[in-house]
Length: 291
Image 1 (cartoon, rainbow, N blue to C red):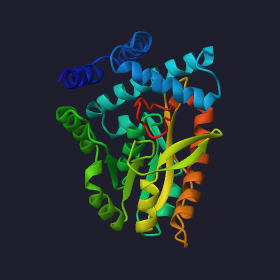
Image 2 (cartoon, rainbow, N blue to C red):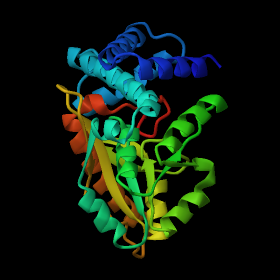
Image 3 (cartoon, rainbow, N blue to C red):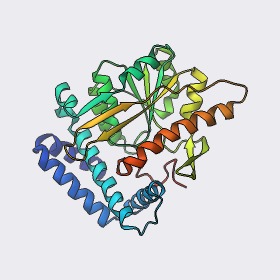
Image 4 (cartoon, rainbow, N blue to C red):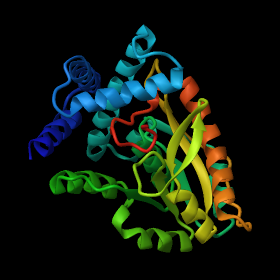
């Protein structure tokens, strides 16, 4: 209950405080949570430091690891502030924050008439990336894991739906298959902790990655388009980038086809993480990449 109330308070201040002040408060709260983690937030910090060590290839005692991990917390705070701010933003305000790039790749994928899986990870403000496409006229559906708190879940989904995003819970995957058959976009985060996983190498270390999105693409013949959103460190402007389409082959060996597609996706992920390690906002200690 108190988490829901905190989100409602955050929504109020995000919408009515001056933008610069709202960002300042969000960053100070992030600093506090990072410096003095309590309860489950200790496991969040451990997960973030683990991920940063993986990306940077450094020990957790390295000063750069701590600096980057703090940057992750601050970027997550900015993401939350912006997400809770969405109800107070019109279309022009949203496009003032993010510029969609590579939409020709999305158009190419949609031209195949098999549906598109817009695949990303908890990287930057992923919600804003999907929103920018929806406001550009694309039919975007989010496949999401429900919050444990039903009120919090309703709050988040209400904000998404007000901005033309259809929300599909993971428990209703059949609806996701239907939107692909209608040649719509199904946005999925690939670092969720789903049931089926396969091995892949990220920065030369073996990780677990859910195979579900790739199995879904193979089954439905949908095209995967990797997508990421990058925040400019100086002015806060963001770019939503859609990469070239990635098709999952349908050969004799399903596992080989899946492994090839996963490896291709991970190579793209690795490039983004190498240059923007503080954009990986996976706080969940049971995330798919956590070993």
